[in-house]
Length: 127
Image (cartoon, rainbow, N blue to C red; front, side, top):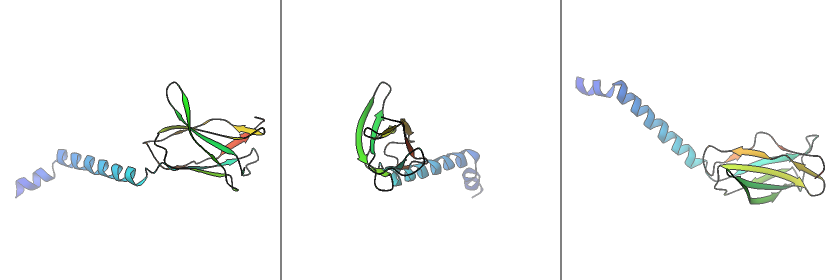
């Protein structure tokens, strides 16, 4: 019986056990948060929501940027993308002939990661 406790409480066994727990927890987290949902808001320079702005979701690679989806903001300036299967994204927003945003790079930890942007996309200047 003493040999069994010694083996179970060995630092190597405990280390591998903790690694296994972390890997299992991470995989459960990924599985629960991999719907490809990306949400955010578009505002003007004064911080007011912009309704009807076109938001373009693009995939960034080493040599190019390819548009993969577009949407239009609602009355509160909010936008929503679903089902993207990328992990390096770029968002841009514009009101045709009025204003355009700078590119906002969105780096995800894993493909399809759900993400709500912490800061809004700001439209400024003339297009």
